[in-house]
Length: 149
Image (cartoon, rainbow, N blue to C red; front, side):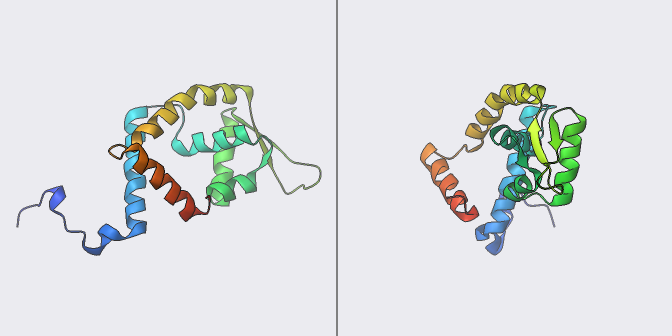
């Protein structure tokens, strides 16, 4: 029995399973991100966290993790890593000693502003081979699916 070419693999009902298709899309997007960025300074998740902190200075770590659907333990590890790299500062607010507020360092803000053009250019290309209208429709549907609409 020989191997079948990739296009000849029968996925059965998986070809219409939303979760399966979203997972493959995520894997394809991440693979392309790392191919194009090489040894870029930020991983996609790091850029996302830093971008949200940039636009929400002082955001509580718990609120950031909830919004980005990052588990608490992973969020703590990620923030600690960003802090060790001098990108994020943590502050315990006086009104809630259990909370942690996050802000970017001046250096991190510069790095994010530099990475912004590349990141969003990549995002505009990742939708190929879809038309601009199809990308807009897919984005709208995903926002609706995620409750962001």
